[in-house]
Amino acid sequence: MKVRELMTKEVSTANPDTSLSQIAAKMKDLDVGSIPVCDHNDRALGIVTDRDIVIRGVTTGNINVGAQDIMSGHLIYATPDMHAHEAANLMAENQIRRLPVVDNGKLIGMVSIGDLATVNVYVNEAGDALSDISKPSNPRM
Image 1 (tube, one colour):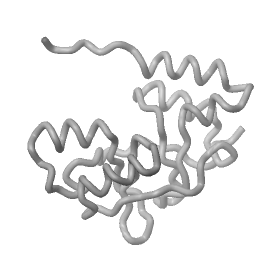
Image 2 (cartoon, rainbow, N blue to C red):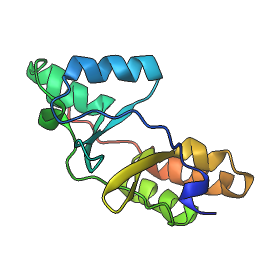
Image 3 (cartoon, rainbow, N blue to C red):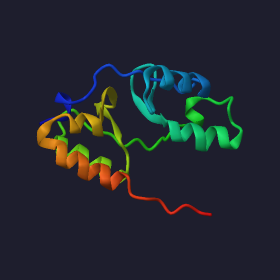
Image 4 (cartoon, rainbow, N blue to C red):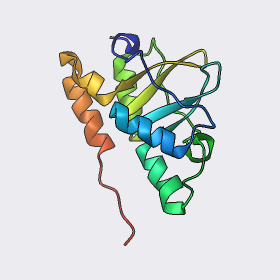
């Protein structure tokens, strides 16, 4: 099965100047943990995760910043014609639960580990990917 068959097509985005508080409010309203950052032509530039807000924003006191200041700029993404197995492997390798779907540089959707788990044939693969994603960290104490 291709990513295009599993992805969510309606994705809320931020632009590089969207404030940290606006992004956090959008995450809360939509009950999501990440917001892709795109330019005015829908070109995918990066992604802001709830973790980015905490690590690069709140803990450093940078609460009056824009998306470009806290986003993960090295975007890991899927393509619409990528097989779902490849998407699951990307998630596992990069320890992420959501992938923007990009076609010719433009954001066209999002696919999550949950999307993979809803298709019976990928339940085990989604579980394996989640196990890899959820490996314990080595906190510094």
